[in-house]
Amino acid sequence: MPNNLNTQDQALSSKIIFGPVNSRRFGKSLGIDLSPSKKQCNFDCLYCELKPAKTVDSYSDVLSVENIITALKNAFAKHQDIDVITLTANGEPTLYPYLDELIDEIDRLKGDAKTLILSNGATIDKAEVQKALLKLDTVKLSLDCANAQCLKKLDRASKSIDIENIKRGMLAFKEIYKGALIVEVLFVKNINDDAQNISGLNEYLLKLQPSRIDIGSIDRPPAYDVKGLNYDALLKLSKQFDTRLPIYIVSRKITKIKAENYSDDEILATLANRPLADEDIAILFDKESQKRVKELLNRGKLKKIENEGIFFYATP
Image (cartoon, rainbow, N blue to C red; front, top):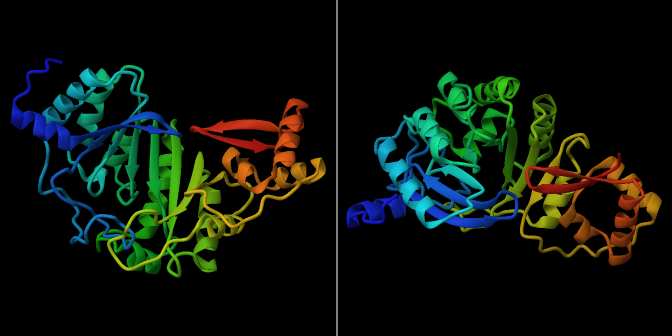
């Protein structure tokens, strides 16, 4: 790609493309913002770091596929060895009207890079959205709520959105999708961390069986006056989910929990009940116990499983 872009093109490219950033889970990631000019979203989540905005069901300010691809080519000229191209937006990326065409164009020039989308999941019941997302290597969908009341209160969804349609859409998509489907649940204190919502999510996620479930909370200043959960609270909350679900805690690992000493039998019993990510092992197990984990791994009593960039310890 030539480097003689005019000033206007360079300014537009800098708004569309961000990064690359080094992601522990996905490697060297290059982001594409499909709505760089303003927030365009069918949710107005309480925890969103963007300023509150009226929900929309379609983009009013639409970039051309040509502009996005030009920006991506320019970024590729500057940055080599990109591991993943991440589709996102100041809002909801699946509202971009030319998503299917755009993904085709990205596929033509991405080389060995993987493709990923970060979506709130609200449009996953639509056939045209499913058709586009089927072409991606990884699809990450949000699901904060198991019921309509929670969706209205926390995610402040557009009136056109129905939680049951979202859930049915995810199930239908999972049936036909060959890539990694990751579900993200973001918990807000005293809003969706109650037993009823967690029970509903647990029941549904057992049906869905995604590749992984990321649970997290607020880590940036939110648009509204709401509070997040720390690592200790998320760890406690994670234990309310069925042990068959692959739960990963996405959090700054700041904790008051004291690392404990585990015998071989206690390690095996703990990891048989719930596989733990390597970084959680580092927090919960003391140094001697961590050595025992490695010894058990070497003896074949444990196995280490890679799940979309996250390593888990589990029993065979």
